[in-house]
Image (cartoon, one colour):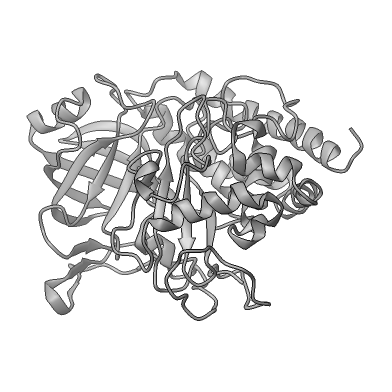
Length: 425
């Protein structure tokens, strides 16, 4: 019984303790026509309370077209973004997307490993209402332009989401050619952020708390440290929805449930979504996730008031498809011991068998041939802009070679993982 659009109202299950009264069980939105899927042009409309939505010329996250993106701002402000000298301070800018202008947006640098002074492909976040209260673009308050700095194929994020999307709620993405103050900055990925708007495309209202998990190697964000939310916030549980239908006490209650009754994880966590996440992560060999190489990293947890459960959500899956050059033979439960949440799946009840079964299901839903075809499609879409990109980290020959490498690895990895999951390894 979950708030996801893929969940139905089934039998009543035990939910997280210490919570406020739960909302009625119901299915969420279908996901179609979600945030950013507004079509048409024009200057937008003004609703109640002074809110103004600027309509895009095409769906913002249409990943079948190359979007034209332009930023105009103070030269000093742009240099401060490249140098990362002012942190997350919003800089004033004019944003143009497929010919539609949004005035006075906020811009600041973004990213993890790619956010360092002097990176010419630094990622940025665009806040449409930073200086103009109530202003949105295609219904969005914000989006991210990702520079693809450390991915020689410049497509791993989108390709990984193609796999995740077949299994669990997943954010949208598109591709754009970015020009800043008249200077070409090359190929960028346009990312939908996890926030109240994107959550509404997958879960029923009202929205619950949303957290980005920021782990540190050697520590486990899922270790129970008491009921108080201050033991987990602001890190490693970083809140991303401020006005929610439940409070931060859900964190301690969730972790307490994991620690006290690991064989009853279904009562506090949407295990179907967790298994889908782990299965997709195994198929693409995600090195930076719940079971990542550098610790428990790069994912979100959403507390759904309708079901009283946590849902894991993917984020920034660019370190996939042998990003680090590793071969395909990483076993199915690699790195599981680093997290209580994953350890339960490995050791508790029938979860391990369910995990292997889910791998086979996801592998059938999005087979290796489909992933390879998607890689070819993205390559044809982005190659011209990638080739002309004057500030990308890798040369054109490396970019072209990387696409074939990703496709070859996909075939090998799928064969290894599916053979292991079927019990034939």
